[in-house]
Amino acid sequence: MTTQKDVIGDRNPPSDAGPGLSHRQIIVVIIGLMTGMLLAALDQTIVTSALPTIVGEFHRSDTLSWLVTVYLLTSTISAPLYGKASDIYGRRTVLQLSITIFLIGSTLCGLAQSMYQLVGFRAIQGLGAGGLISLALAVIGDIVPPRERGRYQGYFSGVFGASSILGPLIGGFLVDHGSWRWVFFINLPVGLAALVVINRTLRLPFRRRRAAIDWAGAVLLVAGLSAVLLAAQTGGKDFPWSSWQIATMIAAGTVLIIGFALRERAAPEAILPPRLFANSIYTVSALLSLISGSLMFGAIIFLPQYLQIVHGASATASGLRMLPLLAGMLLTSIGSGRLISATGHYKRFVVMGTVGVTVGLLLLSHISAGTDSLELGLWMFVMGFGLGLLLQNITLAVQNSIDPRDMGTATSSVTFLRTMGGAIGASALGAVLTAQLAKNITMRVPGSDGGNAASNRLVSAPREVAELAAPIREAVRAAYADSLGRVFLMAIPIGIAAFVVSLFLREVELRGSAAMSQAGTPDDAVGPTVPTTAAAPNRG
Image (cartoon, rainbow, N blue to C red; front, side):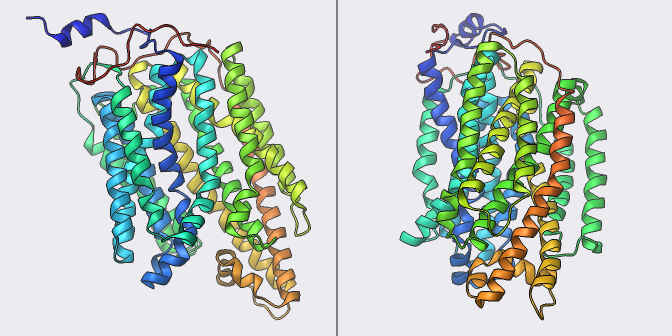
């Protein structure tokens, strides 16, 4: 007997044609996806403005850093699992699950009655966030042809960059005019709206595969990445980099990740299929994503600290003064997307992005206590200009080159590597900053013994710097500015490495149709659907 499901399946056989959504329909779907991504990206930074208030209420400053670390940890390690699950069970179902987990975690965080509860609930929130960013980009890969994809993905790059800068600003406003709990409760109405939009509009053709997630590989991956990320997050803070604790975490992480790689070669349904690395475009793009993440997060993390410590700006004002970086990212992410749609070429923009980032690092290496706002704004704009060209087009290159059945896995792994690079890069550059600051304070402040503990305290508490006696305050500010300049100087070789790697990126012609990895039957046949016979995307 022929069922409705069979008929729909016949109408949508596996093909490269995609669902053929109109420009308006794509925009509606994108609004839901961008809302979910905005929530996940904002919560990486929005909580930082509330940390002093949270510590004042719970009196547990010893676990303060874990509110940020545990979210980054769980959101990073869950991303590849979401990508694989969406390839097997369908993009819409898994995306709805990730939003639901994120909203449950947000609710629990807002209701937390102790620091330990809050840390645990942040871990749940991070587990949900891991799917919001990576699956949003994977869905774009499903519904938009590569030739048109650049102009849509530019919006996502803008949201990601904006959230990193606006997070502390919004968090500060909510804390000042309400309660720190609203940093989490604000997610609920926005997240529910995203859930409704995605539920009503996202109907991707999908044929369920008889496959299961490789749970043995998942355990090895989660354990290995957890060890490496914990080492990156606690090194130089909770434990010295030369301590046995850090050495043990790095060694254990390395062994577990090697075990994961061996397991993936034999697993029937690998989380990260080895065949992906046989694709040179994927391999080069994965390496570029790792490098670019370290450079992006390094710039975004340290520049607000500079503005607050050296220029005495408030958290809100420092966020506003980061807008030139955001402007550069928006200009090139959206602009390059439209140019790629018009020309079909993406490699030149990736290469130009690595050059822009490296030049930005070179300019920022000249930062000093006397750098004026206009000059600094120009340097940040150059940095953002390069990042906007680089970040989104790496994802575009990957999605255009891989087998459609691996769309979710490949997209989420590239996103995961960017976050992983950010965590490692920020920690490594932070260690350089701390060591250099200790040295410079010893040289500039009479009677000071410097030390990593003193420099860590100054970096984390700009108000302490502002309350110092004038001569000492100016000496500390000059020491910090000089130290940050050295950090950017030492990051230049990373930018050069990105440029060299980008030269090996092979360019293939962008497809003119969406590669539907989920062709077949829809996630379900109930409810309003987006017509699969709609006109071609409106290019206006």
